[in-house]
Length: 285
Ligand SMILES: C[S@@+](CC[C@H](N)C(=O)[O-])C[C@H]1O[C@@H](n2cnc3c(N)ncnc32)[C@H](O)[C@@H]1O
Image (cartoon, rainbow, N blue to C red; front, side, top):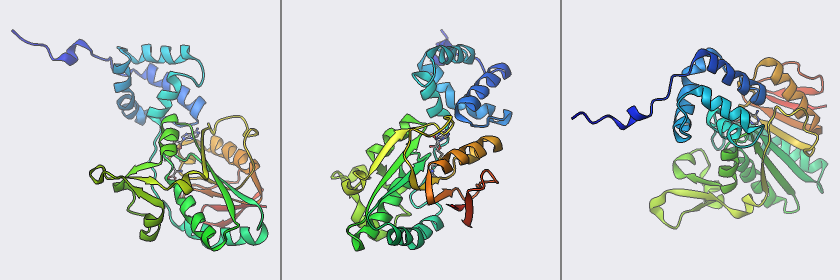
């Protein structure tokens, strides 16, 4: 007797061009992310397990289901979680942090000694950028005890927001954090075999994470910030969407505030309000 492979009971039909086009326009319209046809295999691979979990036999059934679920609840959010690229690191593109600690913080404190510094990391992924900023500012605060700050991190992905708020990381991820900062701001798991660390509470309590889609029409519901980090997010958008996002970010930046983009990103004449200071760092005039 031939025993069938259990997968034979559950074959999912391949992603057709028509269904790929439906999915890619949904992703483009809601997320701003370009999905050229070369990404078809990638998309299929990322969603395959989800279709299996939900017992769908074709992408058509899955897309129909997403569309009946309505905007920003249920499956659409899960689908975004699966298709976004969340690569990040502590001290990623570290020149920005050199500039931030040696120039930005010093100037800011001289000009506004009594003000609470407000920073937004837009597209913060699992929070490494936020906690890198936290460690740098906390060091500055040691020499300037009256200095106060708040860091906000947002992402479209609920999974990333959850993981950023937990602030727990495998110790394989902390190699780029300087030793003195590791000692001060990372807590080791009591069970050494777990090889996980957690960010210290004094940093965690300065951070707030929330879900936000950069594709929203405007960011009027958000605060005004002294610095905005939106790094390695714009690369996934087409040039028109990039410009719109930069304009909206700039409108939430205080005059004299700084915008930091990823090293391969530029503002591309999106607005005349920004002055180029150094690679991918801009000052709002
Ligand atoms: C590659 S990560 C960059 C993380 C971090 N900024 C860095 O440079 O290391 C890009 C992040 O942008 C988020 N993202 C993508 N599209 C977005 C959108 N429309 N609104 C908000 N976040 C988005 C993704 O979920 C992902 O976590």
